[in-house]
Image 1 (spheres, rainbow, N blue to C red):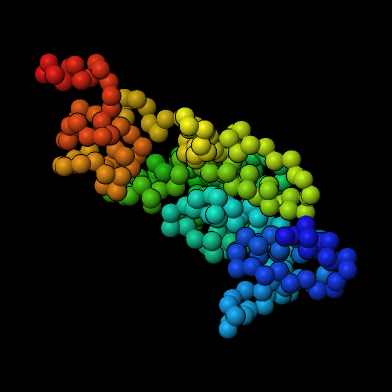
Image 2 (cartoon, rainbow, N blue to C red):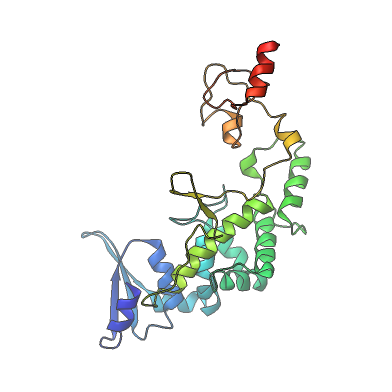
Length: 273
């Protein structure tokens, strides 16, 4: 779409893009200085049409924010990248606008296919302030621990920031998507496979799936202590084991469920008991 828009700009003074997709608006704002025509986006239905003047909106936001928008939009949730629980885009945008370090981090996100260490460190500090606005903590793992202790363990997992491992995988996916958007004016961009270290992986059947973490969610000695209290069946919506990506074990209340760990040694010991 934008490749054609740039070509059309060599012949026409005004370009109108017909799209209701937020991604199109974000990319338009990012490329508004690159396409040498007055750019509009037409949204809505036949009876209710809305025309967005991209150039005027870009002037209000500023060139710095427009450069950061592809990275911020991808990171805060889009069609291909999940969003953090209860953390909206407006809150994230205001935080970026108020901090030049975060603004630069999201401007750099997607500029290459890799995430530099300094960019991830800035995004990690940004994540901490999303969950605790006035915190001085800049590490996701440390903030998770302090929030958990402050609530004496009475806090839902969705209220905590992601751990550093999970946040890195999330940032890799956002960087991959933002990198594709930033190359919208390239005819044949050289795009690596998403499973090549960009936050996704292939399952046994060759289908693409999200790589939520690179390591274990907790040490084995802790994982072995986790159990559920399901009575009739272990369902993804209720079972604490499934919700945490774990198999049920012999310490769970319900035995023989479909999520039960298949370990011959454990089954044999259970039979002996």
